[in-house]
Length: 309
Image (tube, rainbow, N blue to C red; front, side, top):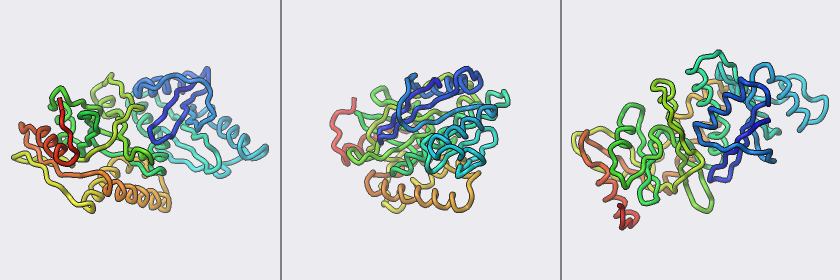
């Protein structure tokens, strides 16, 4: 199989692979890897996400089952669990490190992009199991520190990214994956703005393996005047959890009640832990206000940043 390598700063590593000679899955994976700036890789003894079409699915699933559970055990589902996203099915098994993404391609470009969005599920799930979570938030970098601006869609995250001055760096404007490192705390990885591919025919690429140390979270609200308000850890946990749910709810729809309840609880626990360690604020921003100056002022006081540009 041809493959691509993905490593995140919480230590998780994946090899994304597709069967050789199968144009549907290979072309899908090549485009998916290109958008996330992943490099081709040789074989590694690490967890794998196997992309395949419906014609190859049964043989790949049975091959994985027999490899890890023994000969004669490749019949039926035999412990496999599926998240059915209609045009992409994500199959996993508690005893098998391979995850299978079964692509149900109908030839439409928008469906292909949605399939890529759903294919992030095992990567996000692994981060959640290690104490991280995805957030519906823009990620900016200032003096080497990661700053999140979180808000629902169409409420100003992208505008904030466009308006910051040159000594700031906008890394992404829609989805950020926060991972937890025991040595470094929380680090933030930029992920693609998939809606831009759906509606704006974007050609942008996103270096998802890159990351910055997360220093603060700002929850954006539109206002007449720009100001920043500190918030307590309880409110911060609730807002982090709300932002996370906006990303993850699309993954939960095929889940049974017990699985969804378990996932919701884990994300809430992770949000509470993050709120204890990462400063959080409300950012009330006006249309033309210099909100970044207010952020800089808060960071100077909280973290002692001396040089910003």
